[in-house]
Image (cartoon, rainbow, N blue to C red; front, side, top):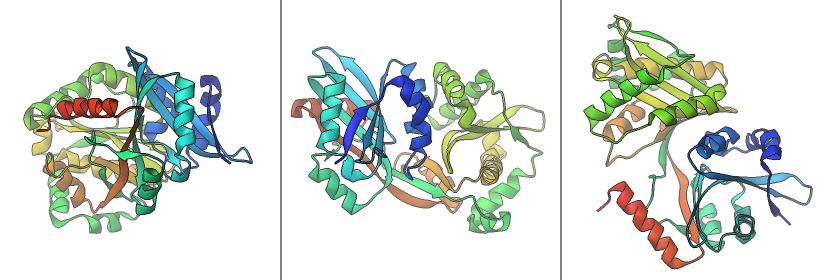
Length: 333
């Protein structure tokens, strides 16, 4: 018999991460630090664990709650739950309802567990529904950096290797960025956003707090041109032996100098020295961002599909209402 319980914050601070890293589907987005980062932006953080008969933790879930009038709450679970899907059951949902004290509740999670038809059937059996409108595609790319330089280079596509060699002609300087300057980072993001005509990737406040809360788990490299001017940067977070891409940006000048290729090559080899065996290159969207997909595919990374987004709601009208909001937010027709 498995029992779900809510952890108090002081206990969670002591035991959360060391238990989280025991699960193969753990991610930075379920880490204690990520929850504290989101707390700064108005989310209420809940952390639930499932204990078996031996009082061993067999599943975990960090949830972010926003409350609205009429005792309505929206719970978002990025990167989770983690653990055996068998335990993502009605007992889990009931514990959430009881511990949050909400009468009207909408619950959505995004699982970074690899897609499995058996897991899908379990979720459906336990009353979970695929989201009507998704925030993410559920597709990503997996890269294994634990190979020799020769092996890594061999797996790059011909064009990717060619662009890496091109970057080496521009006298670029790449180094660890121990104390990042937020103004410099924002300037590069702004340049990239204008060039690609995409929405803002990070606000000043988001950058400041993500670097503060996750600083110990972040590896960040900067790339300067021949005049010492920043033209790009790339960084990831590391939990156990897993890396997750967090930052990737290059200015127009950086693009002309193929800075992104040099940065990835340097970062991924650094991850190898840290024992990273699984590097998640982030979501891909072939329709909206084919260029990013082509860059990632050219590294030899392997496409994968996660279980992705699922939902449950205390009423059908809430479910449709939230999905309608997601639809407008994503600009879908």
